[in-house]
Length: 103
Image (cartoon, rainbow, N blue to C red; front, side):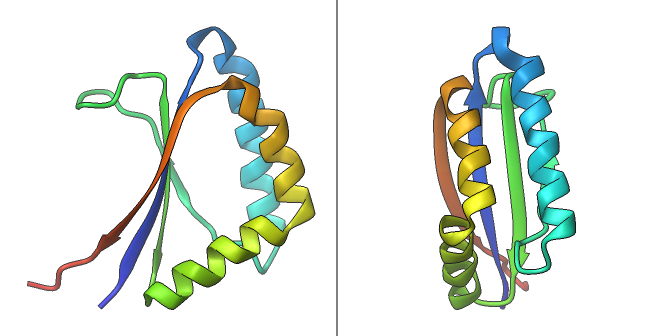
């Protein structure tokens, strides 16, 4: 059984360019840091979320893996510094965890 960790961030439309410049830095940090989880990013075209939403998600083999990833993100000073720069452009955010059903 696996699990999905998802961060949903609604950003200010007027700050889209700056928000995504910082998000590109998050992607680069993930790619060059072997200890950080490597997520996929999505932007809704249709659905309940407005277009000014970014969804980041990553699959993990266990809930313990999600917990370890969250701790790693909090403890990583470069990640924290980037998040502090991006935070002023975020109007809403939430964290979701899903269990993948193997039906």
